[in-house]
Length: 134
Picture 1: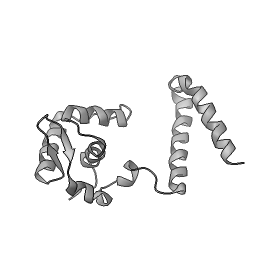
Picture 2: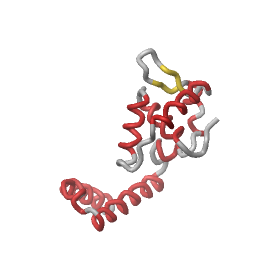
Picture 3: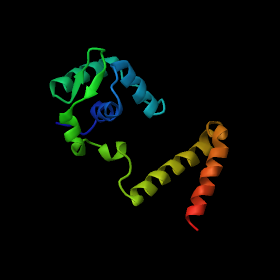
């Protein structure tokens, strides 16, 4: 039912949150990938039609797609679903935070200007995390 890679996991995750049309799905994927990937209409729309035929999503009268009960019930089978639903344990949460810290460290080496506007927020978060370790 679920392929192990490609657009389906992205689309299922996006539609789990709210109904969207094809253009909104492409925008959301581009946003989620921080601009690294924007799928083409030639990839998205045929895949949406296929997912409708498979009973995973439905097309509403307003042109937006929504996830079906069938897809919701099989959510544990979704490829990569653990990445999209959030960490399921404290250890997983700490691993997720560590990954984001590594990303920020890379940004400071390659494109420091991207994080400059967020220095105060990063400082506040650092203080909050330090307080947790006391």
